[in-house]
Amino acid sequence: MTKQGKRRVDVITLGCSKNLVDSEFLIRQFEAGGFSVAHDSPDPKGEIVVINTCGFIGDAKEESIDTILDFAEAKKDGRIEKLYVMGCLSERYFDQLGRELPEVDHFYGKFNWKELIADLGSQYRPDLVNERSLTTPRHFAYLKISEGCNRTCSYCAIPIITGKHKSKPIEELVEETRLLASQGVKELQVIAQDLSYYGLDLYKKQMLAPLVEQLSEVDGIEWIRLHYAYPAAFPMDVLDVMGKNPKVCAYMDIALQHISDSMLTKMRRHVTKEETLRLVDTMRQKVPGIHLRTTMITGHPGETERDFEEMVEFVKAARFERLGVFPYSHEEDTYSWKNYEDNVPEELKQERANEIMNIQRAISRELNEEKIGKILKVIIDRQEEEFYIGRTEFDSPEVDPEVLLPVTENVTPGQFYYVEITGAEDYDLYGSVVQVPSMKV
Figure 1: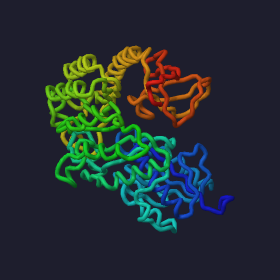
Figure 2: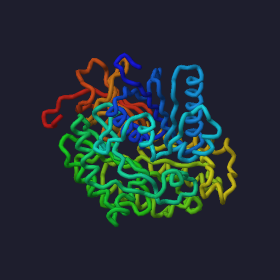
Figure 3: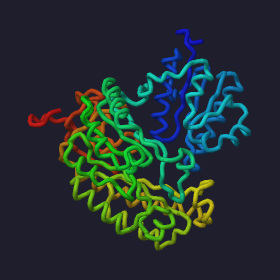
Figure 4: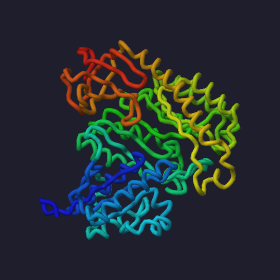
């Protein structure tokens, strides 16, 4: 027992922000049940450890397994009493993990974590269905608007893990946002595996734009940023909302993955090169200054040197503000696993990924240097040594560039300021707070 007389649970979250949201709902339920909870503690000291795993690609699976093994050793040494595992990895490999890791007291999938609460002697509280305990800084939060995915991309295991797309009703999301705003949240990161599909299951039409409009009406919310759209059948009306609503950040996270028609077909992306180019142009025309984040995959089965060169030329021409690259991972039970030979050597996959990132690094530096002298609205996240660390509307937490202000600046984390950009590096900016009477801070 802890000094407070409560049983302590250490929750460890691996993988994406969608997993983080699940952990936050779980932590709220634990706290309501009288547990003391720590999240991602560097030195877990609880009697109980719950690991929320990722099972997306090879590296993520390896991290999850290594973490489980570390805590299995801690249990063996008597440093913890109970070890539970939930999330995507255990959803995907439930039976196999149970056989190979008997040190784990119980495995749960991605959607049955309510049983964990009961197994620990507590009771799930349905009245807290929209409440969670934030693990992020109090001024921003992730808002997961749907689960699952109806796409059939060749390389992706997520539909196998999460099942079909399931939208969360608008009224529940608005209520959840009100609760978040009441806790001091000013910035929403709207997330889903596929934002483009939102609403089709519940309302029989795409409803991302109406949802964003309603979220923006919640008092206290100042920024809304959109993550993980799909290019095929993209909901164009959301660009109109973004262009006219100052609360909606001029930012879109849309995974394009490739540009060669040959590869887009093999990947089962249901979009062509011409359609992709037209979509990118439309986004930039409808929302001047929009910052686009995308990802590319190198080394998918069948990718030729010509396919890769098309990707290189596309990245150079499109000049994306934010771009990441994944070397292809041959995942069990996917379409690619069943139908394609993993015929691009691992070394070549990584070489191609490195080449794209070297190109992108130079593009990012040039685009950052164009911001020098501009005044941008910045939210301050934290202080690190001699700098305050902030972000513009074009920057999502964890994955995007940051704005560094000297600690001599009179700023407070969690607050917005107008900042003049004074310097630029490949991925980060430097700035100083300015007083602009015509601007409301």
